[in-house]
Length: 284
Image 1 (cartoon, rainbow, N blue to C red):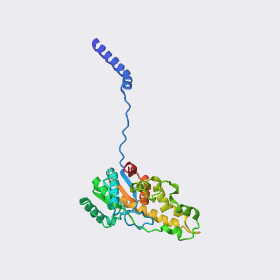
Image 2 (image 1 turned 180 degrees about the vertical axis):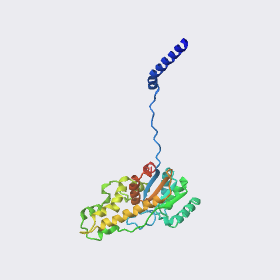
Image 3 (image 1 turned 60 degrees about the vertical axis):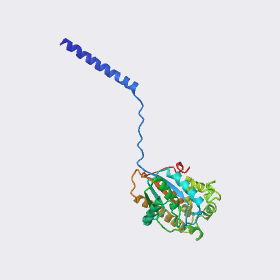
Image 4 (image 1 turned 30 degrees about the horizontal axis):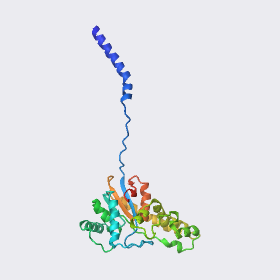
């Protein structure tokens, strides 16, 4: 019995010594734990602005020969740069009603990249080649056509602020020196690099829509109403994008005219579903 009491006493002493030493030992052996940040579950998007490389009804166009072999080579070099994004889906500026034809043409190109399309534009010249290089299987159009009057400012007596409006229209690129996308003599790469500059994307919204808020008759909102139509068109394009069944692991390449790219950029910046990458990580 005496021996049992001794053993029990030793166990109790050992327990308290152990408890007393634990914090010190923990302090000596602890290491700082770096929290693991989970990878974003948002859809990765490379939102790329271009001018229309074939026929377009746009008021402002680039002088560009889409059938010139040197131009094709330059476009394909840019497609190779952008293919490093490794997209799984390509989105282009054609209406959804054209998707069946779009996918047939893309399949033809994948089978025979030397195919010459009758009236090629940025879809056939850049998007198809990028898709071929990246092994993309799916391509969709999300455009929505709506008419609006670009020239309303010159068709009415402007009673709002013709001074501000006319000064801007005389030199839209004054606020972005060195970024004029219509400058003579710059390379195709430089044109596209300028078009994707954040300040130019902002400018394209201003030029295509917001400046019209300075245009209107004495009691009218003619300019603002036309601008609203352009906002509406781009919101409908965004709705078409959101109709697509895309999972969080997708990598989406979008190619469209600069002002559409600019509007999509604004919509996606505020949308947790999408995570836009920096275009210049790939356009280099």
